[in-house]
Amino acid sequence: MSKILIADDSQFMRGILKDIVEGAGHTAVEAENGTQVLEKLVSESPDLVLLDIIMPELDGFGVLQQQGQQAKFIVISAVGQEKMVQEARAIGALDYITKPFEASAVIAAINKALE
Ligand SMILES: [Mg+2]
Image (cartoon, rainbow, N blue to C red; front, side, top):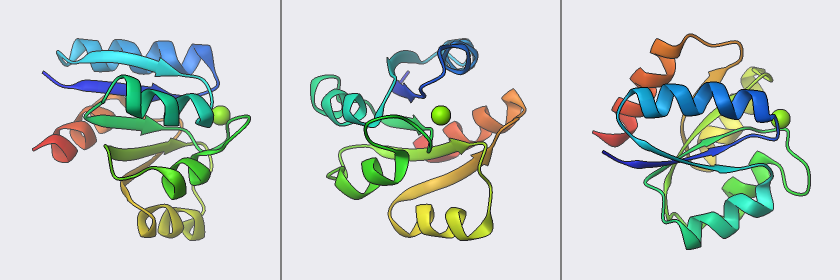
């Protein structure tokens, strides 16, 4: 069992991802903007972050640039342009899932990141 930080400004999306994460036997914590992600990397020490890109205050790219490799990151974003996927991977995202997604794709990416 791992602790997974769900970072998305949409409460609805956090709820969907929380069900997937908890259904896979992991513990879920949540953040609704990039500033909260950076705070919770320290206070919660998550093993993995499911990271939205478009969020208020600090976006997902800002988080990837400022995080100190304290956790692993999977981006889950509605924006799936190849340039953004490559940029996210270049600054530390292990995987990049586009919305809408299948739960099985999220679980597969989590399992791969945590193996
Ligand atoms: Mg968003």
